[in-house]
Length: 158
Image (cartoon, rainbow, N blue to C red; front, side, top):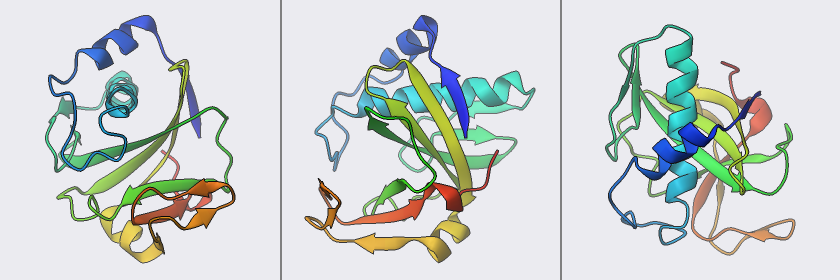
């Protein structure tokens, strides 16, 4: 996992990234928009700083185009540092997106840090994912909708 300290400039860019308030089928009714946007900004900056050609696509199917690959960023918010055995979440509503890769991130709720946990091709996600039904418990956490999960340790490091 790659730990990144979020700068004020990155947070400001994330706040201004999208004009909408609530995405269709938003699990958090719009509360997660900023977390998702900061994840996109972090991946954009990470690959740009590596000299890669990155385009911010800003559409439902994928968030970024990196070296001609369509990347969908999935950022999970939390109050704790991610562990290898934690889950990555992919809503069953989002598993049909027209992307080449899913990039999974973990952000602290205070926006101070983001971890780029890793990436998987859409094909790899489909091979590895495990289904969790809405209301099913994972420890004390209850899934808010039907969700596919993948463990952090299953991701390819970038």
